[in-house]
Image (cartoon, helix red, strand yellow):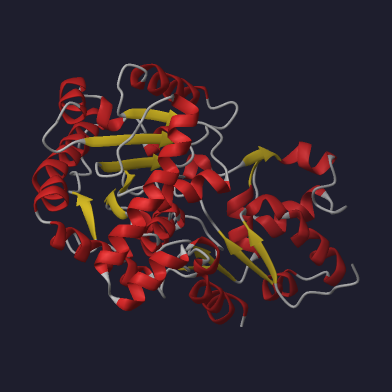
Length: 378
């Protein structure tokens, strides 16, 4: 391309071989560190990519460096090459993708020598792309009546897709919960179904009806997530007000954020580096209902602009933690969300308005781009 960058930004460690290209050009580790910054996305040590050093060398990953020289500049002993650890050692600065993720990352990597400073730049979303113009106009005007009217119209558009895919006829006046993102074990798509009696009681509540939609995709070889996806399809088959939608791409994502009342997010706390779908949901008058993890920690005020599942004791077993979080979901739904939505609409729409007003400008991508320039590139 004929470009000689002042700064090389490794967004995850997969592009690390670029650092060895620059090392070959300048012959100095200091010159590499001056030019490289690194964004880490993985809050679990085991999730960071590791490869055989000898295999990488055979595939010229190290740009022709000898075994000894490549090992020396990366601080590698043995045959295991940790891509993220090497990126931390070859960069002048790194960032996590939320404040909490920064704390988790510094704790996770602190025992390793020679790593760079780890700051954080919280992820964001492009409001110009995602926001519905009529919802935004109602927000700017402070007009909750116009907000509610437009939301009902958008719910009808989503429910047309629900009808086309599943044959179910959802009601735009009923509280609609959406869980939509990549299927992965720690994201716990099935959490609220693990007490089937409470799940059925929620779906069978005729005084305060609830509709729920799941959507998303598992990785092709994540067989646990694939099984969870299939189980939810089979489970929801017998309920007229619950469904799983397929084809989760940008258009469906937009429909779901526009048409949901509640955006459900219940990952295991500290396992979600940031998350971003809830940001665009909030921009479109959907209220976040989440565990206290990722970007949510920098945004949410329970009962003011969102609803939070109370934090579990981190010493609990996995089973006890999941039980705690599931019960927290139902308690908040039954004592806070449903009463506000059905019995106190003025309060509900004020929460929606607070959410829309407070998600920007901080979680708009303009802020994120500026922080990358000032924190990482300058």
